Length: 331
Image (cartoon, rainbow, N blue to C red; front, side, top):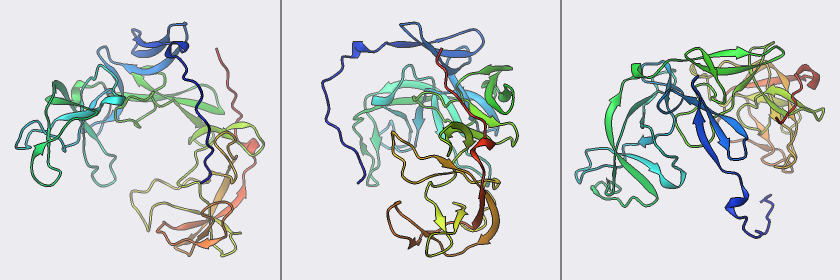
């Protein structure tokens, strides 16, 4: 419902597109350079492998391997299912893989952490316990590897970050040995194959992250990031008294601090024509109150039956001129 369908045209030969390769310089910056000379930042390089800022088991933010296989604890190397292996979906793997990532549960309100190990030899046969019994598990579309020796957290360089540029909008970048590394993001990626997350814009006046988005005056501005769902809720059955509702039910001690504003997408946008972002102030708390909403913009106002956190009344909307305009340039 609501999807736009198109016929597929003739295949486009792969040679139509420029190819690219990873390269790095002596300051820890990795680049993706195309064969026609264009290049873009592609994260960090610690002298041996691609790295990204990651929270490790010692609680520190470190430059950890980025292109990794995963230890999920569901696939094994032996018929008794006692020796875990690392796996990676074959259709998304970027080679060479530089390690094995193991997930850990977060403790209390502390962020989740991860550990790393050396990548071992590839495996042709693996086992799993889909019904309680250990049976061969064909590795269809999956690469499997032995897990090597642990990589001590202290063997991974500490990551930091800095703000650069002049207000009203600055850029937060990760630093490796004191040098800013472009296109990394901060503490938001546990390995992967997609492009590194972009550097973060920061509103210098508030110290809060902002992002380039369409404002209500039709200009691209650095607006607060839209929070929770893009679905707007109301405190009345006519859907006229809009409220901000936390996604954390009850009083959650681990919930992030409440911002002073709530950014949400207006109704009626499409993929090619996005709706503008509205930024009203968050007003007085209303607590746990009955809520109504439009499941879809054209739907009638109906009671909401899900579980959400406390509601806050929305105040006046901030004018778009309160936020810095952002322009795009191509070099």
